[in-house]
Amino acid sequence: MRSHLLNDTTAERYRSSVTEGVERVAARLATTPRPSTGLTAAELARRVEAVDLDAPLHDTIAALDELDELYLRDAIPFHHPRHLARLNCPVVIPAVLAEAVVSAVSSSLGTRDQSAGGTLIERRLIDWTCERLGLGPAADGVFTGGGAQSHLHALLLAREETKEQDPARLRVFVSEAGHVGVQQAARLLGLGEDAVVVIPTDRNKRMQTVALARELERCRRDDRSPMAVVATAGTADFGSIDPLPEIAELCARYRTWLHVDAAYGCGLLASRRNRHLLDGIERADSVTVDYDKSFFQPVSSSAVLVRDRVRGRLPDQAGKSPGTTRRLDALKLWMTLRVMGADAIGDLFDEVCDTATKGWRMLAADPRFDVVAEPQLSTLVFRYIPTAICAPFAIDRANLYARKALFASGDAVVAGAKVGDRQYLRFTLLNPETTTADITAVLDLIAGHAERYLGGETLDRAC
Ligand SMILES: *Cc1c(COP(=O)(O)O)cnc(C)c1O
Image (cartoon, rainbow, N blue to C red):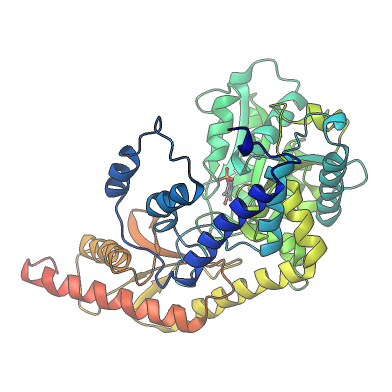
């Protein structure tokens, strides 16, 4: 079994094994006509359960055949132009190549002596990102396992920054469209039950700064401690960007840590046309970026950046993050920048944002649909509205039905969304291959399914 160890004597087995795996993925790419196979998790669970893990196949080809059945065939093809449901981008080839290198070399970024080259590569990318953010000469950061982990890390630094002794008195402010990771982080940090103060959003799903000012004032009046304001640059549900300059102003006035969640919006850092949408981010104390959301990187690739390495107490790369052994995830972004360059990434992200704007115009002009906010990034939230007068719950059900019917047909995958109490649908556009023609076609399919549903409902007097 030593022949499976990767070393000087097994280079040929390594080459042929990995090539065989790459061939399988390439074959799947070539034969994925639909964005979903409609297979249920229950069916898949039966197949995975049936595998006897104590009876190895002793054969790479057989194991790959099995994997094809269990995973590859039904894995969600994020590269499909009609997969519109999730904040998962299609990935670029230089980054996928880097993944193969990362696993084979298997550096651990614990300390510099474990991987000098890897540590220096990560450092350069942190500096590059801080510079694009405009965080100033003392900025620093570290790659993490994901956006929620980056939030936790940033809020930990914010907590250390306050002089408050009683964690129950600390308050964190985030908009109602902010990420659940903020609540999670507050819990993990041992803050009180009502630590997170939710600020309402405006019509375009951006934090209302008037409401934030009111809550910060109330916090002061009640003798509570404002620990951090989390502004979102690209909400997961709407792609909306909070008014960063006004929020930064309030944070300065109330001496509060400003964390910007740019997990989704960070792609704008590479954009030549739309970088201005992030104006004000340079005043953040900390920032979360998810390169695996809008830099076309494979999961996972995320970082937390901090304005002030002294204040943020980040001594060296090793002590910066919880956990000692870290993967060289940074290599994916490195290869992407060295092969394609940042402008190419920014252009791809601009393209998906342009498609979203065109999609919004189409939806706004189409009497069959109600569309929520004009997109700042690449998300569209909308719903089908029948011409006949219908009970609100019937419209909700028609939209839910349309979503399920689309998935079952394998024609397209769209997400559901709640706006207030009402059921909406969502397109998250992250694929430059998705065209306005795709959007038109999917909207027609949605209208068709919803109408068919309501036609049936009429018989039940729902309308
Ligand atoms: C995805 C996302 C996160 C969380 O990132 P994970 O990598 O899933 O932990 C946080 N905020 C926003 C706005 C996101 O879109």
